[in-house]
Amino acid sequence: MADIKLQDATPMTALELTTRIKAGEVSVEEVVKKQLEIIKSEDEKYNCYITVWEEAAIARAKEVQNLLDEGKLADSPLAGVPIAIKDNICTKGELTTCGSKMLSNFKPPYNAEVIERLEAAGAVIIGKVNMDEFAMGSTTETSYYGPTKNPRGVEYVPGGSSGGAAAAVAAREAVVALGSDTGGSIRQPSSFCGVTGIKPTYGTVSRYGLVAYASSLDQIGPIANNVADCASVLEVIAGHDAKDSTSVPTDSYQYTKALVDDVKGKKIGIPRGYIGKGLDKEVKASILAAAKVLEEKGAIVEEFDLDIVDLAIPAYYVLASAEASSNLSRYDGVKYGYRTENFEGLGDLYKKTRSEGFGQEVKRRMMIGAFVLSSGYYDAYYNKALRVKALIKEGFDKAFEKYDVILGPTAPTTALKIGENLSDPLKMYLGDIYTVSVNLAGLPAISLPCGEDSNGMPIGLQLIGKPFGESDIIQVAYSYEQARDK
Image: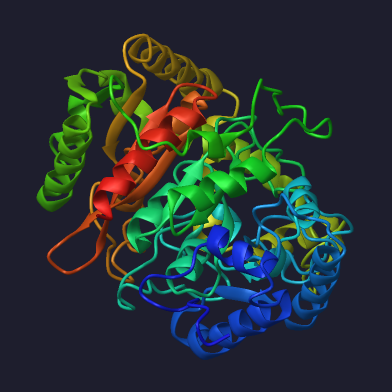
């Protein structure tokens, strides 16, 4: 097992690992035990995990090995691969906390659909990873379980809200991970930690079993060390699910067929607003250099105007907060989750439970949401935000009449230092400026590393596709990755 490079600078990918497992060069149990050793030795530094399933993971490894020995799972790209799960995705009988005191004792009686699909593919869930409380945050500092630190520099945040998932992959504490993305929560931490993450088209991956933040925006997606692993995981978890009313069947989920090193004739647009004021100079240089690489490989790269996305941040935070206010009303101390110990009457139970159970950022967004949905303000804020959302989608639709893929930065800066944003929520919200419009329009997008700043912190390149255009962004990302790694 010494040559299984789960913690080297160039780690073994999920596809390489499962190939060696199927060839009999290493057992699933050996791989899982090695992964658990790495978590034990490293996680004290980074705080990626909320729970580690040591006994369950080893038992599952033996089960998967038996299936492989019987000739089953031969076609699965994830057989025996250790995978970490963001802690807002339900796992039967295992803690699902959403990084919150409110759900610190919650064990769901069912699995999310994505968990069922991963297990059917022979993946081994290694544990649940840290996140901003109820996915509300961009730094993984709002977690009840303490902040996660960036493996590329422990004084920096890993991004959020899927910071634990991205950091676990970057720290080699997981080969791949699942995160969720409401306004950039897969892509931004992937950018900050120097890994790759895909936010699928809304409706591509089942939301059944994903604890809701903003139901019209949330999507589950993979985080990994390269494009091929992300495509393979997405291929496993994508697909229509009758249990999710927003799940949309499409013609094909064969994303690994898009792993082709060819961008000749591909039309790539760069919104001028994405590379203008507010973008860090080093980030801009790396993004334009990546565009140049694609152009040299035969892509047609042009700048164009997409001004409507300037309104994305206010529209997003009005809509997401409104939906959060509604979704989180279920946590009242009566049905499940945390309940205050001392109360007098039902009203006092509600008040104390929610005051004690929720953190500051969650309370802030719930209050904003309640305000914009209140009588007298509904039309002025919520309805107006819905109209802006429709205009943003129209703007992207028009752009995709001309371009196959839209290129830009994932975030305006590299990772910030821990504590830098907590005192200024508005600054944190503005960090999502390049990602939230993708969720408002329901589009697919991928973030992958394209350089480093002068402090050695990663820079992320974002590629946005038309609805159900995952194959386009995967092909362009893979082509860039091949050129980058030469």
